[in-house]
Image 1: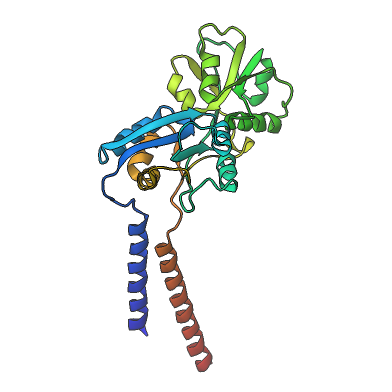
Image 2 (image 1 turned 120 degrees about the horizontal axis):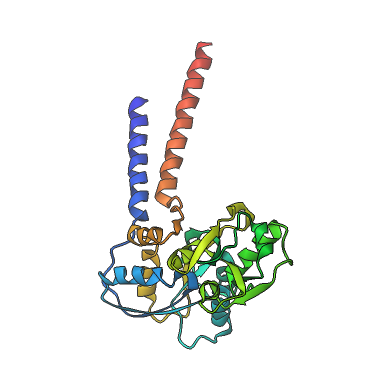
Length: 298
């Protein structure tokens, strides 16, 4: 009985090891050609760093990035107004990817969650406005947020206002994307916009022009999740799939972390699930066998 149980544990260990191996990004052959990527504006600084890292192993791959509000970019793809076929969509918020999936624009099996972010309330670097709660925004003459119709950051900001009891009480200025909001608050010519709501990672890129006045509690708005997927319209499928996988590699996630993003843990792999199942089954059998022996003795 002990020998059989040891054999099961060995089998489970092999299966678990297989799961770990499967979770690592595949070292495929070198790829080439252009990749057209639509990405959230909050990835403007970080994504090119990831691409440069990828090009160390794939020097013949070039990247053509278009950054903007994720909802607006997704709508362009759905309506077919994008000038070039898009290979990869890298979005903030689940809704734009959900819309693309509903429109049958995503290649099955390529959608993945990668990062988390948080909101920050910012003020101009020389501002004397003190903000120790979301409600303190009521003191601001104008507050800049992303346009909720096309910018997920604006949707999260509206959730924040609603959950803090100040929805509809602010004089809002709507930006084209989160970087536009950052610019509106930090502009040298700005004399009426006292505060703005952006992602923490965006605020960290401009601490010479704005300051993070307050970090709202994360339960005051929906989780901010970044995800990517390969699009059906891609003209460079193999390279697109490979780079999309690379976005979850340890090298890429390290760069994202330095920029202030929080990587989302890798879900359990099939191999790992099989291993857990085998161990669980054998433990049940062992417990069952002990119960039978005990019953016979009793």
